[in-house]
Amino acid sequence: MTGLNSLLQWHASAIILLDDCSTDDSRLILSKYADDPRVRIEFNKVNSGSPFKQWNKGVSLALGEYVWIAESDDYADKRLLDAAMNPRLCFSTPALSYTIEHKNLPD
Picture 1 (cartoon, rainbow, N blue to C red):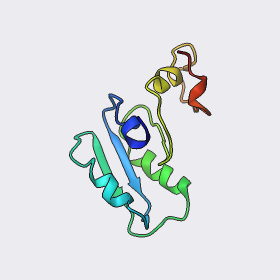
Picture 2: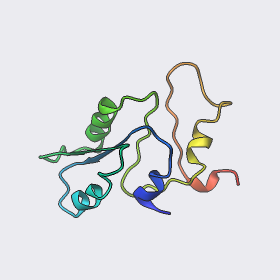
Picture 3: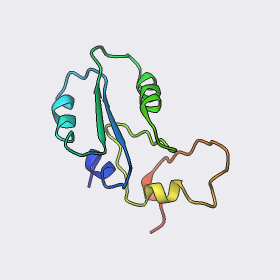
């Protein structure tokens, strides 16, 4: 499972899909997921010029306790969030957690 389909395997309460006024088929691809009740799709009318502006937009739209930012070429192994949210590694105050490579997850 790759790309967006790998991200949709999670039991997330909300999934925000952002398109930064792409010139490719992104709008068409993202629109295929509009029927999923967890999915909210936002299309920019003008390219923001920065992925970080999109990340900030996504965080500002998020209503949940946790936010996971995934780029269009990211793959999400089904164990990714379990590893990232490992209780032994979590703190009681807000923190940033990130992963570099999915191949480092335990089997």
